[in-house]
Each structure stands twice: as structure tokens, then as C-alpha cells.
Amino acid sequence: MNFLKNTLLLLVITSCFSCSKSSSSSSSSNTGYLKINVDGKDFETTTLNIAGTGGSPNLSSCNSKDQFKQHHTLIENSTFFVQVGLVHYENQVDFGNPSPGNFDIYTLVDYFNNNYCYKNLTFDIEYEDKATNKSYELKTGGTHKITSITKLSSDNASTTYAVEATFTGTYKLVGGTKTSTLNGSYRTFIRVFK
Image 1 (cartoon, rainbow, N blue to C red):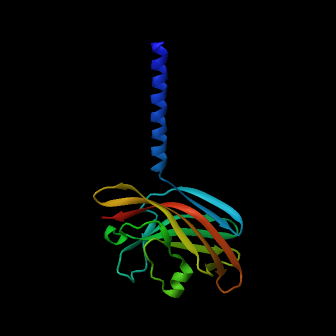
Image 2 (cartoon, rainbow, N blue to C red):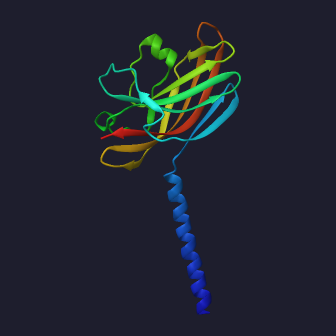
Image 3 (cartoon, rainbow, N blue to C red):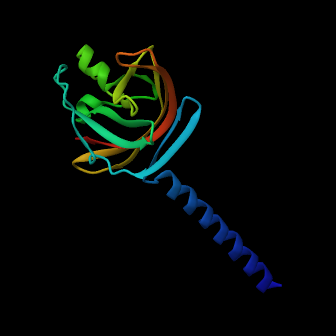
């Protein structure tokens, strides 16, 4: 009877440890994703995205704050090309401690045509129609809602965050009348310097 009790106790302890191990590893996962719906069709890609790589310092310095555009990934087929990025303030003093909420969404066309000044956590999208080789611009106010900003790690030099969000918008082909609806969600990683 003691043997049976000890075996059951061992099984209970083992199952508790495996439960906590699996939940902890999924919350610190380094897998990003991009899910989009283009005119009613779903597309998805997952990426191993390393914060601070696969991006570039941002072109806009109109607010005198260092910015970094973290390229996330792209989705492409025979009719369209979509690449997204998240522009964020590069230094912790400027980045602050933002809370989930609504943030700007812009296309590269909007940036160049309107001399847009990127703000912290602006969602940047490049959307191209491959049949015409023309880009889409945001036709009406799109939405970019960050649902989670999670601190993953920190050292003396930087802090890494996971950012999850949803987005939607109606886009118009530059120089044409064709419109397209694009919406989706993503998870990406950013690095902010201390």
C-alpha cells in the first residue's frame, strides 16, 4: 500500500512540474507570426524573429528621437506582396512603458506622400499589387490595436519585448480606383536600448 501511495504521489508531482514547464516555455516563445486576410482570403506565416535584427534605423527623424523599424515578415503570392514592420523608439528613455491600445498605421506611400512623422509603435505596411506593380495607400483610417506588450528579457544594454496586435484597413491602388480590404494580427519582437 505504501508503494502505491508513493507511486501516485510521484505521478502527481511529475505532472505538476510538466504543466508548469510547458506553460512557462510557451509564454517566453521566440516564435512570431503574421496572419492576414486579403479580400476574404487567409494567409499566415510564422517566423523566428530576433529583436534588433532584420530592420533598420528609421528614415524619419522629425521628432528628434532615434527610431528603429523592426521588419517582421512578408507574405507574397502571384497577385500581391505584403511586408510589415513596427516602428518604435529605439531608446528606453523615449520608448517609456507603453500600454496596450490604439496606435498609428501607415503605408510607405503615405509616408513619402505626406512626409509622415512616425510615432512610437507605428505599424508600417508595404502592400503592392503585382499585376500593376503599383502600391496601395490607406484609403480610410485603418486601425492598429496593440493587445499585448510583454517584457521578455533585459540586461545592462537592452530590453526585449514581444508585441502582439491586430490591424485592419481599406486600401486604394495608387493612381487607380481598385480597392482592397486587408486585416490581420501579428506577434513580433523589438529591442530597446537602455
